[in-house]
Image 1: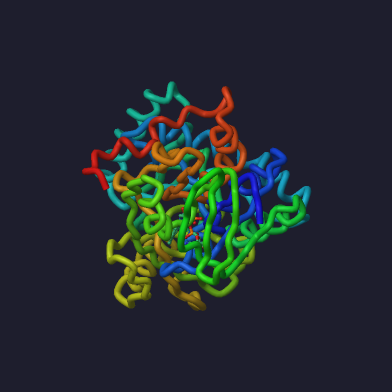
Image 2: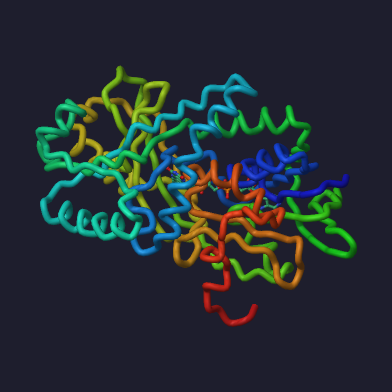
Amino acid sequence: MNADYAIIGGGIVGLSLAWGMLKKGKNIIVVDGHDVASPASRGNFGLIWIQGKGINNTQYAQWSQKSVAAWPQFAEELQEHTGINISLEQKGGYDFHFSEKSLEKTLAQYTSLKQKLNGNYPYDVLTHNNLKKEEPLIGPKVIGAILHHQDGQVNPLQLLKALLHDITRMKGILLTKKTVTDISKNDSFRLTCHDGTSINAKKIILAAGLGTAKLAPKLGFKVPIQPQKGQMLITEKLPKMINRPSLIARQVNEGGIQIGFSEENVGFNEQVSQNQIAKIAADAIKTYPTLAKAQIIRTWAALRIVSRDGFPIYQESLSTPGAFIVTCHSGITLAAAHALFLPEWLEGNSHAPNLKAFHEDRFSLPPS
Ligand SMILES: Cc1cc2nc3c(=O)[nH]c(=O)nc-3n(C[C@H](O)[C@H](O)[C@H](O)COP(=O)(O)OP(=O)(O)OC[C@H]3O[C@@H](n4cnc5c(N)ncnc54)[C@H](O)[C@@H]3O)c2cc1C
């Protein structure tokens, strides 16, 4: 099997890249195996999110905003070619506050970031009473919220499905249940899978989520990434009760309320824990008291892929040119940028985005 690009990893990052490269007329093979981790792409919260991102890194805030701005085009193209509605909504999202002190602290950060972004950071502060007009079921303990107008949500499983359909339509090859165990390079790259399958490609992209760390050193990358567990729960389908999403809860297009924001650094442990789920549920009930009556139908945990500073890593190997690494913490938010702008960078085009801020030489690691 020969390809212009072989992409290792068929999660949201690998598929977004495959889609973008196929649109450029490249021959693409995506190889997806099984990771020790439950892939983040199937267990995430589905937010397309700006607020809170890049508070101390303007370039990350701008890159996320570029993606958010490109999302309507990305979603429209996917829907047009596949007929799959990925339920994109970009009508803002909330950061809820339960004390004046926390609201003021966050506002100070947003004010500073807004200045650095030349004003492109549109948000409003809603008092409890104003918030109640937007979200009538909000509880009395919520003192107010920041409504950021660039935030939104999508159905991440439908997004995966649409990408898979469109990649197939564009004659991309997707190999599943094949774990890449070795990579070598002579004139071209050769990937070897656990079952002996081999794939030749002019260029390769490592987009294997947490699996990236195992393969990366062979290509001279350092890749300081680690797992971070997040736990979730979802209720039975309910009539419309939440208008806009937040990190605490969102109502998915089918009606269930998806709840959960937690961050645990517990290695590759992806077990659901009762104490964390209870805490997440309590936060949601504090925000929307009526949720106390809702039936929980499923809980799960999934592992985020987090670099040492939390920002994406986009890097071409210095020792093995033609091998690239693409990994990030917010692959849903960044899917549009990965699909529409990273192909320019991979191809070395003059109008490619400047991604120097996300090269891995920012990590001062001892040589591997
Ligand atoms: C709880 C939680 C909530 C989240 N919420 C959001 C959110 O609201 N918004 C947002 O933007 N992001 C969110 N994220 C992050 C987002 O889900 C991830 O950034 C994204 O899914 C990462 O995609 P990926 O393709 O890099 O990794 P993965 O989804 O892990 O996919 C990697 C793939 O590579 C394969 N693989 C691994 N090793 C190999 C190998 N050697 N050979 C072949 N294949 C291999 C694996 O089998 C897997 O299919 C959340 C994540 C979690 C865990």
